[in-house]
Length: 91
Length: 225
Image (tube, rainbow over all chains, first blue to last red; front, side, top):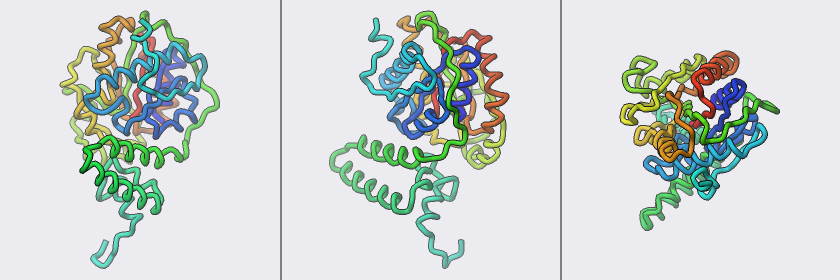
């Protein structure tokens, strides 16, 4: 819940946010109407992916950043998949 | 527990949740019914047996993930909202991007607790839940070798092995290096998310919003743990 409260407060201050959650806590994001949420298929404590998986960490990060450009309404929740469109693919 | 007491399955499950067998990776066992816990262990042993022959550890990870989801997804949410604020983002190539982690990341030498150990933090989880969280600023150019993590609510071993699991500074550095974002904020941020949610919501987080805005952050990525 702390991420939800922080994200909502940052948005109130004019900062665009993306909350990155694991699937186990997706229901929190939905209940708290978090502005933008990316849901990853990873274990708790490894939200971005397993240790050492830099490529996966980057794919998740790119998907999160893409969400700042594509989401138009608060409460947007997207499930991460490795094939998601990303900033580097836009170039 | 005296010698004649036979541990029940419920006691066994609960012992992983801040009990005698505390394990923050498997504390979800306490949230499963006895029947589901039995089924989890049956599937786990079956998958382990297969892994011995096939060295397929992804299936073990997938099984634990599946049951972790099952354990938590039905939980009651204490704070619910029907709508929320929404700040438009600038184009990525113009944006100043910061990370914020509720995962208890801090810089060596700037420990906000003054040296609490992971075990001490776990033992103090009740106090954490009633305290206001402290925001830690981490210089964006800090070496990942100098980043530490301590948190009473999740298994930190992955983050200890590679902080990027919860605080993706390496990937963000790559994106900035390729000019896919405008710039990285001078500072990233972290706190311990196990905290008084009312104090966070009503007073602390709004102050963080003003602080980050004053420091020029346009986009903040919050990596929940």
